[in-house]
Amino acid sequence: MITLEAYFDYVILPILSISVMLVFIRLFKGPAVVDRVVALDLIITIGIGIITVYSIRSDQQVFLDVAIILALIAFLGTVAFAYYIEKQKDD
Image 1 (spheres, one colour):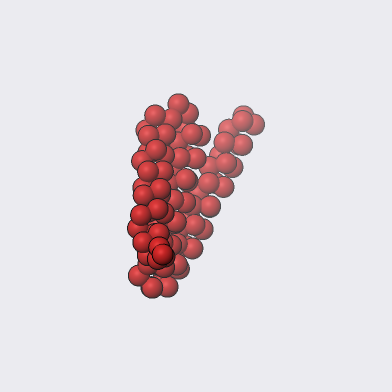
Image 2 (tube, rainbow, N blue to C red):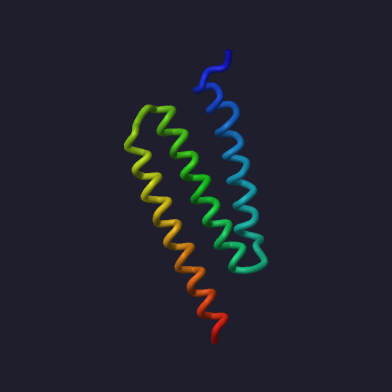
């Protein structure tokens, strides 16, 4: 029987690590600025997933507060960039 800790260590964290590496490739190769912003937002989202897994694994609920604050900052940054792109199209 596989435990939750083993599942985190051998399934979830490797998948999140591989996805971060693939998104970093998109961040550096992105042909447009929009692609890079989406990649940066996705890296933050994956980071939130890693923080959540670590919080569950170490039984420290304080890290969930950090993940929520990071999600809010990422959301506001994405909205600000979308507003910038929209204003740029109007000119």
